[in-house]
Length: 118
Image 1: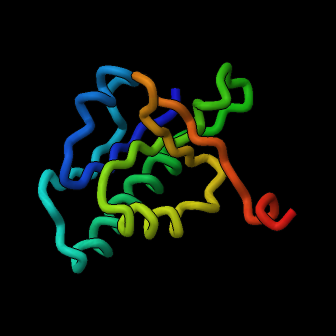
Image 2: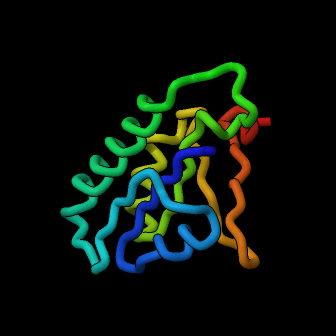
Image 3: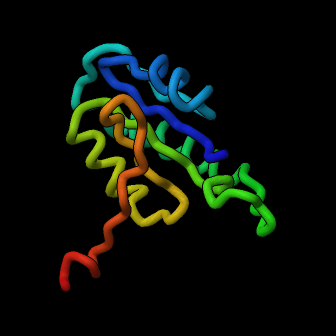
């Protein structure tokens, strides 16, 4: 199973994540409005948790599921902060973003710069 990391700023979503996907590997939680000066600290904390999750996963080529070596991100917070985090982790293959839609979480399809220039 993928390692789930929840980034929640302002509004808590971890309860819904537990209900639909199970207990997360890590949570970055600031259940309040954050000041723009805090963005760098929060992105750094999230990035460290993502790296920790990726480095602690032992790759096993006989794994029964391709998601075993992935990190799934659940994001709730200010758009600018989420964009900054995306700039930092956007090129990491094993990180997937999930979106809550129509009563369940779905993996958002990846997109590359090459696809956009075609």
